[in-house]
Length: 215
Image 1: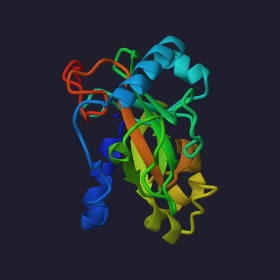
Image 2 (image 1 turned 60 degrees about the vertical axis):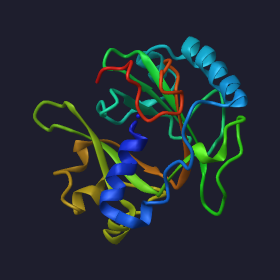
Image 3 (image 1 turned 45 degrees about the horizontal axis):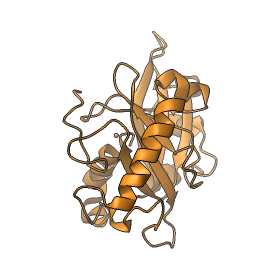
């Protein structure tokens, strides 16, 4: 939905890190509680009004960095990963037609327990390790290439600074031919992340997939 694909990123990172990430998914599932329902309804009304389309998200400073994942979600991030703001989630995700699907809220996970925020049970949150994302472009056509990322240890080993990531490091790693082929690059810090469907989901607003959405 992280990139979205945040569940997608969790799966990708788990492939690389194996058991190290096995404990980072939600601890509970099931339908929302009463307090969670209040939270879900509030963001459905608010975000649905202010960010109904991907164009609205881009006008507000959200940047696309993924293709549609297996849930049908295309992710846009505002790069404010650790600033908890119920009015401005760290990510918004849209379907292939640019219609709002859901949102991610995030807060730093460095030395912190699962969050107690928004009336949501702490067990709903994912934890993600720090990594680097970038959007490249096809040097011949200029078309954007999404879903590109680098694991932090590899980026640092190549001389990269995650707090000020540069396209030159990607060139050094032979991931892109030239710095001009990088549209944007950014650090995705270690966070606790909450995914919420804004579009009604018969499985519940915190479910990983929404059967009402066709990829």
